[in-house]
Image (cartoon, rainbow, N blue to C red; front, side, top):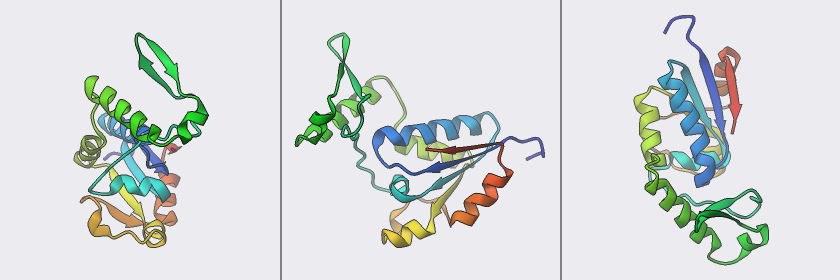
Length: 162
């Protein structure tokens, strides 16, 4: 890539279904626009690199959560998120909307990121901390730490924390 190539880094720290979309959408879009992208997966975001995903939406603590219903939008009261089964119900509703609207799945977006040559870095410290096994992670990732991220961030035009 030439010296004029835009560079972007994204720190991915969340592992729920709703928080998985922004980093992958922004990263793959930037790559499609010719940017060199590094995504650094740490803490709960590291789970997005597992081969087997069972992503859920967390309505608890998400006061802005609305779901389209009967031609309108229903707000999800924060207290409701504590009730048994609400997380599974909200997750099913979200997955249904994603499929109905033709939005790419997280596994599809991960594959697109790899095909777009996005540098996907799994935080070694988090792997050790949570006792993950890298054989359970998707292919095409590299291991690194804070210094690995910082080297990319120092060179980047855009740094995002999601």
